[in-house]
Image (cartoon, rainbow, N blue to C red; front, top):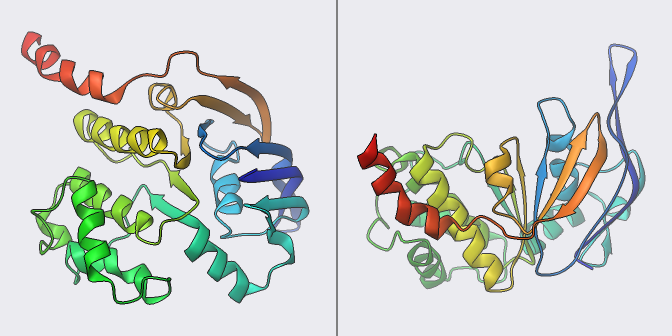
Length: 243
């Protein structure tokens, strides 16, 4: 089992008031699944993503990531798990402005098993369609291209799971579909993918949708026929031409 959460809570003290951002969530994700977590603002989905990504630890309950019980790890061990088992993609890309696309992708190699392997970074960028943009600065790339650099960086250490927090939230329709096409391809290749979104149409590209509200799971459903980003991209020019 890739993800095993049992009755997990995350409680914050906000000016003396207890806020249960995650309130007793139990969730299992098997290897090779593609799961979307959807919910409105304030639902707790971002807190849940931070827990899944080992950026935070539960107040109570248990969380096992690829067999490792996260709550028993110290900060150094959490950092090691994040770098070796998790590939993170954020809405805001989090690229360093003074580094090229290639250098941004190489950053995790400083801490991973492939230290110094620049060829791996080049290959990762080629896999997301940016083999001709290796030495471009982030400012020279579109939002969609920057997000693809971020995906390449997330893949560089061959993580067991890719976690994406609102990965299309800052993108236009075409760029968003290009990103979803990459996630669907990664999943077809056997990669476990979990993404957080507030958009139903984005969630429908996954094979399973988990709905969260007020820190609790309110629905967990398989998607019988996931939307195919490649098909949607192929139709997009015709739809634009008709407008």
